[in-house]
Amino acid sequence: MKTLALYNLKGGVGKTAAAVNLASLAAEQGLRTLLWDLDPQGSAAWYLGFDSEDIGGMKRLTRGKIPIGDLIQPTRWPRLHLLAGGLSSRRLEQRVDQDDELLERLAAPLAEDYALLVLDCPAGIQPINDEVLRLADVVATPMIPSSLSVHTFGVLVQHLARQHMRKVRLYPFLSMVDRRRRLHRELVETLPREISTLLRTGIPYASIIEQMGPRRALLQDYAPHSPAALQYQALWTELRNRLGC
Image (cartoon, rainbow, N blue to C red):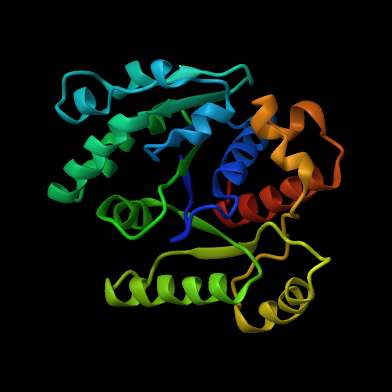
């Protein structure tokens, strides 16, 4: 099983939209895929049509009172399953603070059933994200082409160095790109020279992506041939090559 994490220090950068679309593309291409929504907001689960009463159980899981498989739910997309704790994910965050190998132990049995594990992480620097950074084969970081986002990415790189996590395979990609904005256009041109691991594919700022919320559906469902959907497909191709799956 390969593990792909979607992570950024900042929220509101298109992380969850990328996570659910990439997971669905992997499943569509034949990989049995589990999307683990680690964010207490449960946004990935919500995009997939699950409400707050449909998810949870992290407290029982961390106490060993329920096997992880009992919390996994099928979605309406073949080969794509969901594991989401919603607000109960805060319990998982607390336990990881006390046991920095907990997440790895919980994820280990999943390799029996899945080819790909996609982790949608909460924003910020916290123990559960440090554990994800150590666990993941590839960490994809959406980055808006703005000065603040570039600065935030630099802070993340510094954090990895201070935590001696130099083996993390960190791949930023541009997200919510608005080519009507001069700064966006300039950074699209200059950042590939400044960040050697920056992926070639950028995700546009587009109303058709925003429609995922009202529709509670993925781009592949209602606009599979749109420019935005094609960019997610290209992004998945880049990441799949780096994952080797």
